[in-house]
Amino acid sequence: MKKLIAVMLAGVMTAAMVTGCGGNNDGTPADAPAETEAPAADEAQTEEGESTDAVSEETEVASEESDMAYVKDKGTLVVGITDFEPMDYKDESGNWIGFDADMATAFAESLGVAVEFVEINWDSKIMELDGKTIDCVWNGMTLTDEVKSSMECSNAYCNNAQIVIVPADKAEQYQDIDSLSGLNFAVEGGSAGEEQVSSLGLDFTEVTAQSDALMEVAAGTSDAAVIDSLMAAAMVGEGTGYANLTYTVGLNSEEYGVGFRKGSDLAAALNEFFVSAYADGSMETIAETYGVQAAIIAQ
Image 1 (cartoon, rainbow, N blue to C red):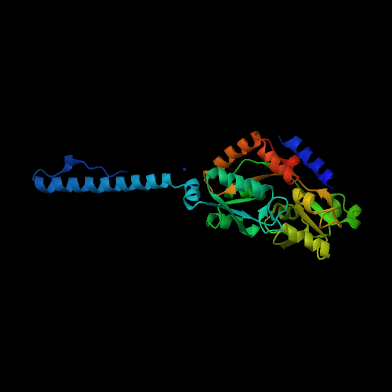
Image 2: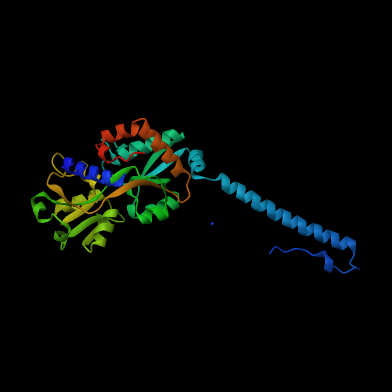
């Protein structure tokens, strides 16, 4: 199973590589008192000067405000995630681990701040980000048009695909897209998997997380699921918790990125971190820990 997905990802990597009011004194009556005229001019100048200063101060404050400064000031990078092995999941002690979790921890350390992981509803990720409940979305997030228009995204760092999961004993019946008609799919709400089944006109039920989609198929309450290939490699097939499930059809190819608030300077900082981590081999080392090295994109 893992070999099959690794081959698929290797193929994807190969294919992918924003009238002033002027005064005119010429029209001033000749008999106008000088002491009246001068103070009026001075007053207008003072008001205009105060307005200019206020704008200047606002501009200065705005230029000083940034996500980088905000995160460093509070001392914590809050990362929005879901339970998504091998990218973000808990170990036996309840600590968040995974390729994305470990990379996020390393990035936070490079900024001199602590990392905090917060589970979010994937369908509400943009609202959580804009509301500053979290500082970034780092959870095997596909760089869709919606994501890129709503967030300040990092460069792509990992290849992925949406794949169909079915019971292993029925796999032979579902080997191409045409054969999927009539199945009811379980998909994570707001995910790339939901986008794929919707575009194909297939019936589906939204669930909270991709792991829930697998549970639906294993329990027989859904005929199939569409999840990320990287999750499938870790959780489906022989030697996993879902040995009775398997992968059949690949629906697309895509790339993962990290999302920050629109205009955030943290995206550029993360891109620099990615370049450094790729060059010194630490990204590869973390990827090997979780078996996703075949999907890593050169930085």
